[in-house]
Length: 293
Image (tube, rainbow, N blue to C red; front, top):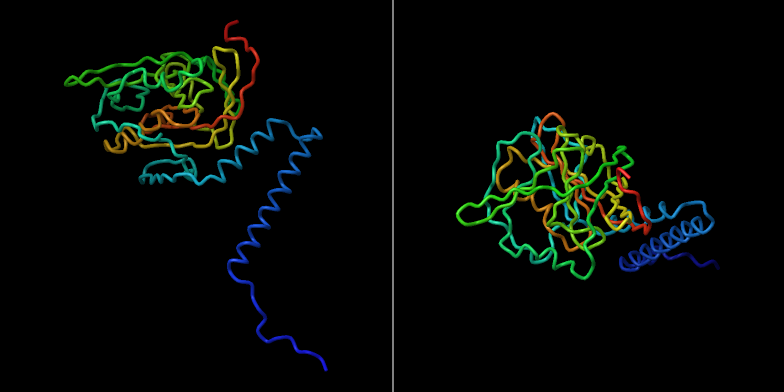
């Protein structure tokens, strides 16, 4: 006599299904990385491709902080707003809501009150390694090769409180914020530049996309490579004070190593700020001829 199968077969429990799914995903990832490492060993893919893949997977796997930007009816955006990485270090002092205004035309940098801390605090954060000053910026995707000089800073004293405002160079050059991090150090390396006057060094910066590579050469002769992770257009000129102070957080020190590029947007105006954030890839230890040599 044949045995009939049970009418209600036993179904795997939810925990078992989750565990089985996790094991399958882990197995696929292991096979995926093993395949790429094999291709690298055989010379099919380059070290650059392998590093880029690893960085993209790393920052995709880490849940970012999402900042939503809702444009007005007459505003233009660059596709979907990307998810943003956490940009504020632990225990960063918060600025007092005081706005500095200026009537100068062209590029008006992000504005923020100078925090009432010793000016050497940022330098002391990185005193274990020598300060490497950036001297040249190269972005192949937009055919940019430009020198980097130190940005000038205007100081305004109001009611005994000192405020700082960074100005972009009045020439074809990026401006490094001297109070930001040097290359190869933990912290935020900030570089600004004009987009429609005085050389227009950052004219095409809005064409960058996530995954583009940026190279910055330091005074030590080494090349520091970065991968773009965030492209943001932030309302600035006509925005309320709270939003302008929120925008200015992008130039504050960070507890991770990053590169931040800042300019105005769009090309025919300066109503918004274009902020590019990039994460480090690797450092090439070779000497590089400086511009003009």
